[in-house]
Length: 195
Figure 1 (cartoon, rainbow, N blue to C red):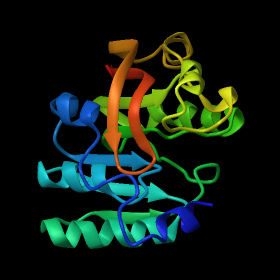
Figure 2: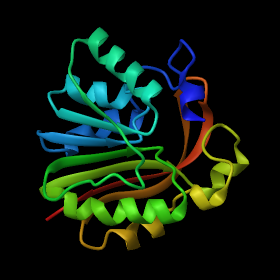
Figure 3: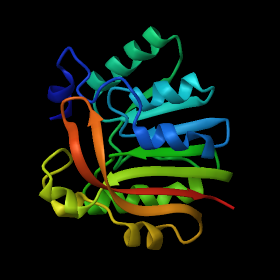
């Protein structure tokens, strides 16, 4: 599915970074950042332009090839890893930041990935996440078509008890990100830091 979606010439989610990431990137200490389900690279390239050492992970090689092309156009370097997140090891104590923007996974995979986030962060490292809530199903402006793949503020709070939560809110906001995220949407925004 994702190879097919990304095979279009244009960047289907645009080339500009996610608004929430752009507003809050300075929460992330400078250093190594891991971008989950990064697709065509817009967020990874933006972070690299700010001086972060960015690794982008996605299951679509087609998307990552576009990410590399975008990085070259913008004059930055990112590392790209083609991997299924269900089998990808986030590592231990190695990232200053983990960025998860609209990374919607089936619940067992989401749980597996989220359980690795705290151990993979260095002390002071930050998780920055934006995802659609169940209410997004009423909007039809992007995201998966099933509620099981959505996220909520209470779920995220209970998932990361060992992190210090800086922001955890569910809001309606206008999202304009390429062909597949356009219009009002309902999201959860979450920022938390490892002590």
